Image (cartoon, rainbow, N blue to C red; front, side, top):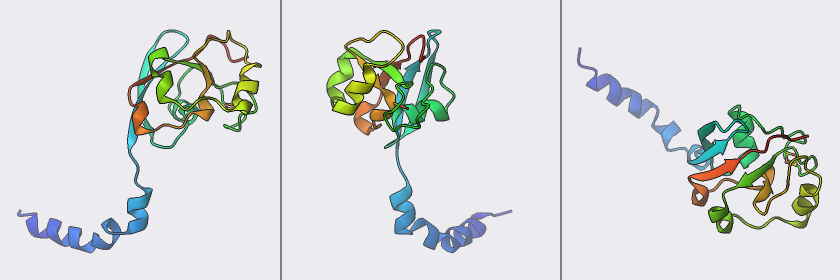
Amino acid sequence: MDIGPLLARDIEANRPYFNNPLRQQHESTMVNIIYVEPSGHRKTIDVEDGWSLMQGAIANGVDGIVGECGGSCACGTCHCYVEESRLGDIPPPEAAEEDMLDTVAAQLRPTSRLACQIKTTAGLAGLVVILPETQG
Ligand code: FES
């Protein structure tokens, strides 16, 4: 059976959908992030551009992150360590994040950040995010 005409008909029928600017606006790219769980297990995950590192971890069942407040910088249970060589790729923490970092359960390091305050962008592709042994 020649499916050529069927495909052409289906493509034509769906053209309004594919050409819809709202759909095109909604489509996003994925950014490859490497999470290192407290056990040392590495999970490489494609996180939607614009999501926080916390959202990417929670949505993909990464161990070692809780995100109790849902990302409003109010719990400190999304504490992570980002790889030192990539710190310059990430906007520095705002005052609220710095205050919350003072309350986290695990040891603070110069690379400590709150995963809910870091938005995934194409510039973060390949970033390694290390989760601490405890979140509280
Ligand atoms: S999820 Fe609560 S501070 Fe990040």
